[in-house]
Image 1: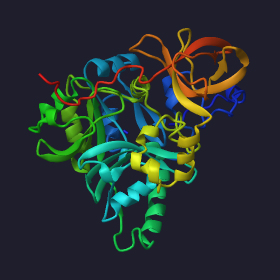
Image 2: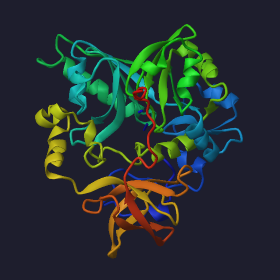
Image 3: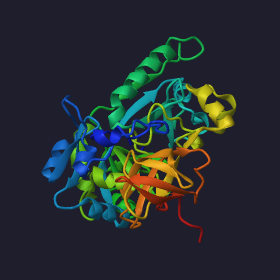
Image 4: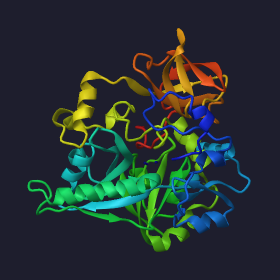
Length: 423
């Protein structure tokens, strides 16, 4: 999950980019990966509980969304790290988790999000979005339901302060309102200093099976469980941000480093932000701050599927007026994928119509040379009518219009474990 990013601006180029089609406030790509992930800020950087562990393992640390985070480790480059996850297994230091409980927890979260959580089976997870009053995405989250009154919500590190402030504001209103939370109050607990690591790749289940007696074949994609790992009770959810089979593992603070060390033995390779970004883009997944922000709705972002069927009919969630209207009447722009054979298009690259090269119809929000596919891929927002797969467009890369084509996402097929195939 469920993540959440800021990069240095190129003022010269940025001044030329039209914001007409830009949903997210799109920063422009730096020359190097380190510059790309750096956050311009004077505030002290936060450190995750695994910070010293990263440094001890020769991580190149960079500022990222207010945190000091590993870009890569030792002499292992981003492409080699990316390929190792696709072929074997890698371990990432990821997001943050909050615990929401109380008699009206389901109703509260269904007010904050458009998901149908009341019908979500226990110990299941779903991608969702926190919405503001205008239907804009505050954050994309993974919500795990353990009981009708117990939820775990994974949020993006870079949206921590905004998310927590939003939760607190809404909980205060909810708990004081008759017919909502009064008398059946909701509580929120921030799981401070808990470790949350993602083990991703085709060998992920094998690695965990070697250190736990839990039967991981029974834990299919989108399901979660409390699992004993060397005597420590950890929360494990099957899923992730790479398109590969994998798990997100939440570990108590006092055991985070030891269990991370245990999990990260060969063939596991520690993996940083660089590979994480290329893996998630190949999987067609959004990066908050690039591909999503508070001016972007789930309908525009191609995330209408997170809106539950009953929610589409009845609404009842923050931002519903805008979102339901867009579902009925359509939107003027949509998030789509692109393939650009000639050159990699980065954030902020303008998109033009083939039959009218002077007419801007969109903007790129994320782009990379794909290590898996051997070609350049990107995602971005494009004017409705130009969004269909196979549509030819032009993208401005280094002041030259390059041929590109709208493609479906994910670019690389997902490999989620959904149970053994029938014999």
